[in-house]
Image 1 (spheres, rainbow, N blue to C red):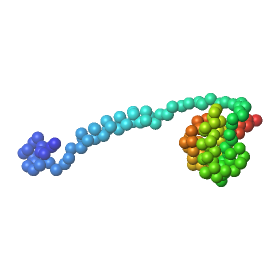
Image 2 (cartoon, one colour):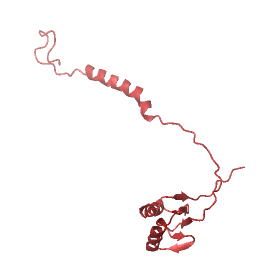
Image 3 (cartoon, rainbow, N blue to C red):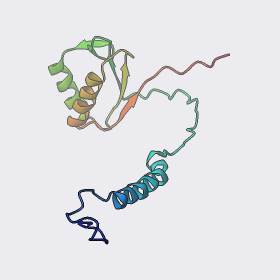
Image 4 (cartoon, helix red, strand yellow):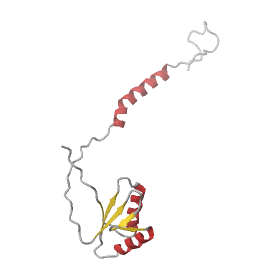
Length: 141
């Protein structure tokens, strides 16, 4: 950089100041680049999702209703079960031909962990048909 001046008669020693002009130029160029590119990083895809009112499907003969209350207790067709009995029934249901559909009804205050464990247990036992039962949204008048 600049260790001396062009006029060496004026100053005999090395120049003690640092020339910051190139650093400022680089910083301004980077600032302009970030200002231009910042909106590209924060842009999200705007979607307007469809609204649907699904009709209630007819319950088939080979349907099992699994319910979970707010405390995490599991019910098989309105019969309370413990974990080992539930596992045994899931394995037995997976061997039926055709496989029954599991309809999962969970209280809105149920922890997601309990729902995920039940889904994993059903999948681990070989059941592949799983449906979620919800209450239809009431239209506001």
